[in-house]
Image (tube, rainbow, N blue to C red; front, top):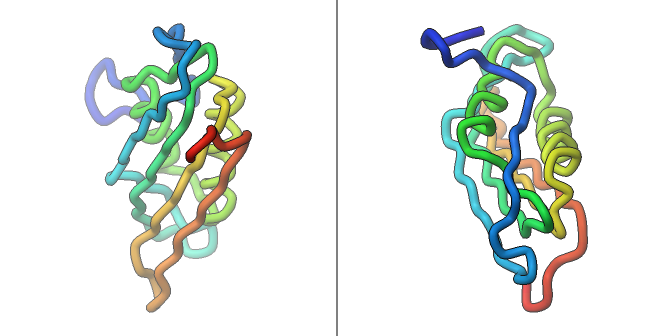
Length: 126
C-alpha cells in the first residue's frame, strides 16, 4: 500500500548508531494515526501508539517507523497481537535496554482497550 508516490509502507525498520551509547536516556514516540483492521469484521481500528525505549547500540530511524506503522493499515489484527508484534519487531531491530509499547485503541462497541507490553530491564530511577 502506498499513500503517496515513493512512500510505500514496509515492515522494514531502519536503524542508526546510538550517538551516546554510554548513557541511559529515553526516546519517546507518540504515534496518533495508527490504523489496522478488525480481524472479525474488517472494520478499521484506530489507535495511538506510545513507544518509549532506552537505546543500546542502535536507534530506530523515524521515517522507517512511520512507514512500518503504515504497513498495518490493510491487515487484520487483534489489539493484543498487533501491540506485541510492534514490540517484538522493535526489539529485533534495535535490541534496546528497555522498551515499552502502549497501544491505546479508540472505543469500539462501548469498550476502550489499552494494551501495554514491555521488554528489557528498566534503567535505574525509571
